[in-house]
Image (cartoon, rainbow, N blue to C red; front, side, top):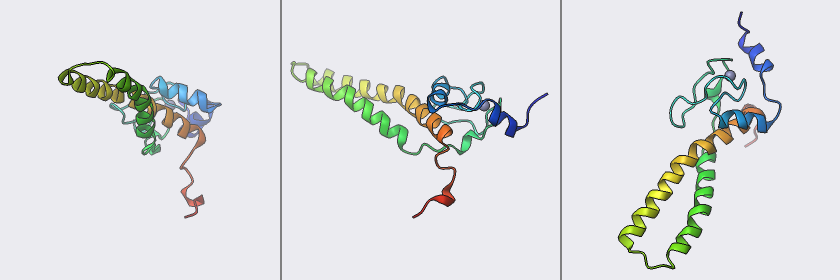
Length: 134
Ligand SMILES: [Zn+2]
């Protein structure tokens, strides 16, 4: 016997933002912690296959990109300063830094998006556009 989507939303609901974020960081539904959240690299599924939560409505917009750039910048800027003190050949330095920074972005972006989706799910941010004032 399966619960209705409304019942499932209440039964497995996270008790805190951190619990919701931990679930999304594991690639699981922020509501129940069982179903998968990712359809592809950083595209979330429309509905949880376990509790039918409407995950497709979550919109992180530019938040994950902002967090990724913030983190990658703070990692790579000091490295850039350090490596420019030494006489590395430019043909080796520039491609290495570019490749490293690109791979760092690709690795951190899903983590950033998971953090935002978990927080947005628990806070229900953006669920009440009629309450927004221009
Ligand atoms: Zn779920």
